[in-house]
Length: 549
Image 1: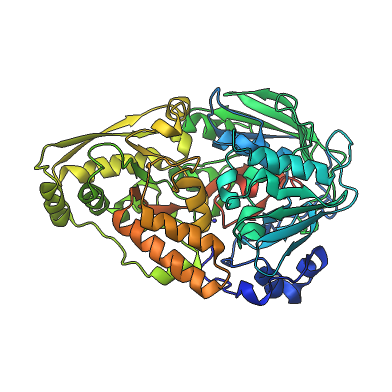
Image 2 (image 1 turned 90 degrees about the horizontal axis):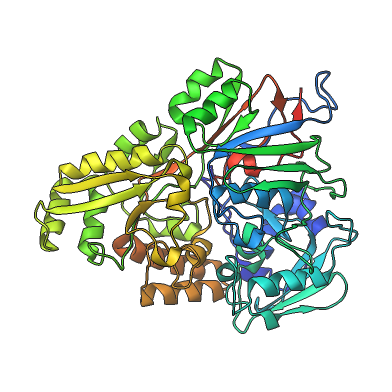
C-alpha cells in the first residue's frame, strides 16, 4: 500500500460543491476533487499498469484464456457475499464480482466507480449519490437507485448489521432514501465527513441487486462467479455486460475467465507457479523472490501500509495490564523481523495503523526500539518475574512472513524472561474463531485504511473485527468526534490524539509494514496493474487488462 507524501486539503472549503465524474477526470482538477471528498494521503511510485504491451499493440497478445491464480488457503467460511467478505479468499470474489459507488485508485485517490456524482450538503450531514446511467448487473438487468437503497439498508440493518456498517459513521436504514431512478440520498443524525472517501470506497459496501441471493450471487464487476468451492477455489468468467471503467484499468476483460486455487502450504503454491500449474500467485515468500526471477517469474513487490500485527487481547490475562502490553512492544527486535521474517521486503512499523494518515503523521510518535531492560522492569511491576508464559497463535494463511515474525518474537522474549510458545495453525483453524471470542495472543493481516476507517472496523467497541477487544472511553469519543469534524486541521489533531492514546495503551503491535509481494509468469501473461497503497493482492484483483502473450 507507497505513500510518503500526502494531500492535505480543507474539506470545509468545498462542502456543498458537486463532485462529478467529469471533474475527477480532469487532471488539473485533481486537488479540487480530492478536497471535495475529504482528506486523503497521496501515493508515490508503483502505480498504474505494468509496462508490458497490451494485446492491441503486441504481436503475441491475444484475447481469451483462463488465468489461474494461486492464493493462501481458506476454509469452509469462505463466502461469496460481499458484505461478509472477511478473509483473503473472500476478497478475490469481492473484487472480481462486485463494485462500489466509489473506489480508491492505486495511489489512494478517491474515484467514482458506479456513481456519476457524489454531493455533500453544507455540513456533510446529507450526501446525494447519482448512478451512472445504463449500468447493468451481470444478468442484464439495469442498476437503479432501488438497488443502492437495498444495499445500504441491508448493510445497516440494526438487527443484522454487516461488516461494512461501522465504517458508515452511524448511518441508519431510514437515512437511505430513493430520490429518483438513479439518485439516492444518505442522511445522518450527525454528520459524516468521510462518507465520500473512506465510507464509499470500502469493499464491504459494494453494491448488490435488490433481489440479491448470496447462494446465486450477481454483481456488476468484470467477472461472474461460476463455481464456488469454499476452502478449495473459485471459477469466474468474463462479464459481457461490464461497463467501461474510466480510469484506464477497466473495460471489458481480455481474459475469458479466472480460476482461483487455494493452497494451504506456501511452498506448494510457489512450486505450482514454477511448474506452470498456475499463472500467478499471491504472497510470494520474500526468500523466494530472487530464485523465481531466474524462471521467468515476475515479482510484484509493492510497498504498502498493510501489516501483520501481533495482537494482545486486552480483556484476557496477562494483557489486561497495560504494563505487559508496553513490555511486549519493547521486547521485539523490529530490525530482526525486517531482515529475518521479510528478507528486507517490508519496512519498520511503530504500533499504530493508518501510517500514511496526516493525523498519524502529526502525532509524531517516537519510534519504538527493543529495550529488554525496560521490558523486564515493566513485567516485574506487573507481577511477572521470569515466570510469564503465553501462546502465540499464527498461520501462513495471513501471508508470508507471519509465522517467521512470531518465531522472532518468541526468541526475543527469552531474553526478557518470557516463554512464548508459537502455535502455527492452518487458516481454517485461525479463522474458525469468532471475533467476539478471539485468540488471547495471535497474529493476523490487515490491508491499509486511514486511521478513522481502520478504527471503525477494527477497534471501536462494536467493530466487526475487534480482535484485541479494545475499549477506551476517551479514545472512542475522539473517534466519534473525528467522523463529525469538517475542518481538516482539527480532524488531524483529533486523530493525532487518538493515535497517541493507542500508541501508549493499545494492544496492537506492528513490528513492520509489509510489502505486498505477489508474482506472475512473465513468459505467459502480462497487463497486471500494480497497487502500491492498500496491500491488496495482485494489484487489487483488477484483471481487466491482463492477457496471455
